[in-house]
Image (tube, rainbow, N blue to C red; front, side, top):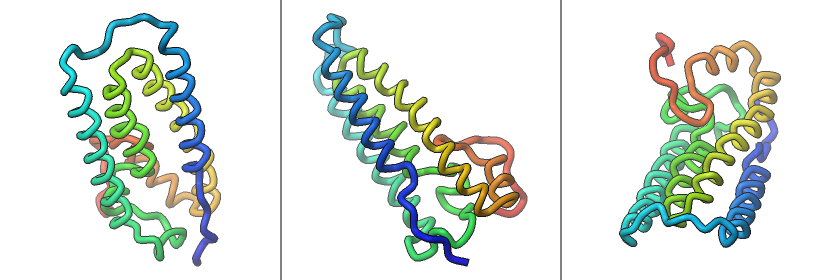
Length: 159
């Protein structure tokens, strides 16, 4: 059975993350804290690494679940063997951390922490829809995979 294509929580998550980033920029002048790094090259390296690793994770996720197979069942191979939402995880963790370090101010680390809570909260709505569609198969999948970051340890005998 092929499910209808849905956008999921990505668009509102990106919008709310950007809104929180704008708030961080707005608040920054009122919080006179020293920069995180004294050397100007470290933030650029952090941003570059965040972008590279995010792109690699997204490519791995897309290759693990091609567009034509989306909505046809629970995918538990490739990137989805470790993380239920690898694209959201790539953005909200690796990419956002690189961006927060690039802006080189403690307020952006608070932004990074805030969007961790935001994305974990938003993804619950998408997971609820997946449980409704795929039932026990998705619930079992949730037991051994992390939501946005890998959960190491318990693995199924057959992925």
